[in-house]
Length: 108
Image 1 (cartoon, rainbow, N blue to C red):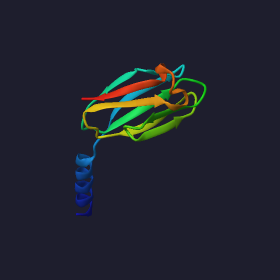
Image 2 (cartoon, rainbow, N blue to C red):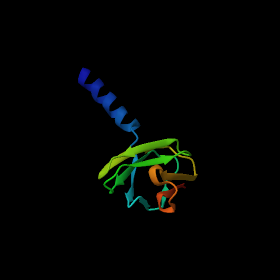
Image 3 (cartoon, helix red, strand yellow):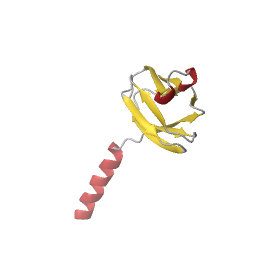
Image 4 (cartoon, rainbow, N blue to C red):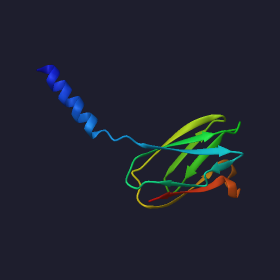
């Protein structure tokens, strides 16, 4: 009986677990690739920010209320959402005055 209850609880937990969609944003030469990232509305997002530069970078978005320092040659994870449709700007804060260090997330 205990095994049946445990199995039922685990099954219900699996049904209610929501996996995040995964997207990648690359920082290379202090520039974002892509500059515009399209994400689905109403879903949890796992954004992998891959810093290919040797120096640290900071992903920052005031509109998303997120910031994350990513050491050189490493990947940071920024969890988002569920997001409403719209446009959300982001910058590589250490170089934000450069146009290449700015981008937009478009949620549809």
